[in-house]
Length: 231
Image (cartoon, rainbow, N blue to C red):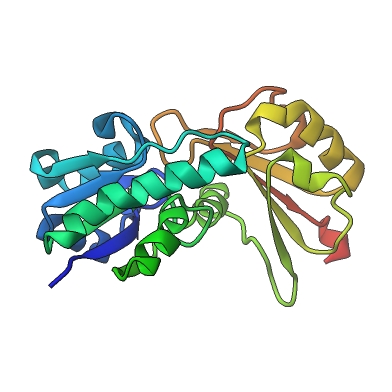
């Protein structure tokens, strides 16, 4: 029997927001993969080990996939990562790949998944709490109400047409271009709040566009809502 590769979301940062299923899979399996060169230095490991101390004694497998723009290089990194996991699956061992947030939202495991499935291995995604749901809870606001739509947008280059649709915009992974993003948000007329490093010891909350600095960390998440009178 070949092993199963699990893509397991560990939530946004607070260990208490890990699911019971994620904790159980970590406890029940011996091989844990993490996205980075040094597994113990990854954010996902630090979150998970606080909820499941047994993780420290597991076999930790680094899956390094550096962020590069060259698509061919990306594919090669993904293929190598899948092959590393497949070595354990071929031995009949399950591999639990830990990822931030939810396993179906901008998750590195989903880059490996097609290669593993094409090679005949079984995969399974295990949901976790998304960063934008956690950030909304931290801000104590709903993301959407009634029939409002929600638009989830990654990075600055996706915002070239402005934020001209009704409803709530969730802006992810825009920290390195925050100054430009703020200009787009200001022109939109929306009510803006942001959480940086949600659920982590370094968490910061910004209640207005004016409070948001021009430079912010990678794990900065913006929720931009229509003014109340427009809802």
